[in-house]
Image (cartoon, rainbow, N blue to C red; front, side, top):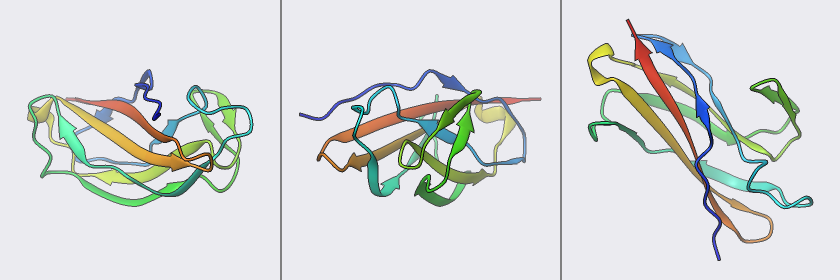
Length: 116
């Protein structure tokens, strides 16, 4: 059975900026479980719009990284590069769907509110 959890992450952004967010999946992974394959990240804002963002470089982390001051080992997070934020959109929600080496489908989210 697939596990699902909304990551409690918020990452405010400025209009027109480019960001490199990472979504932490450690709360969903078993002790010896890792993310594998290429995740997918469609985008939707709180109004259901998605056309104004460009998302590139979607991948599972391959080196140790920090997310919210927590060190994550390779295979515990999803990373990407996002650009094209519009102030009038409000909140963008990045939702990463990925698979683990144990066959679990996991979904993690990060909310990116656009600040003026």
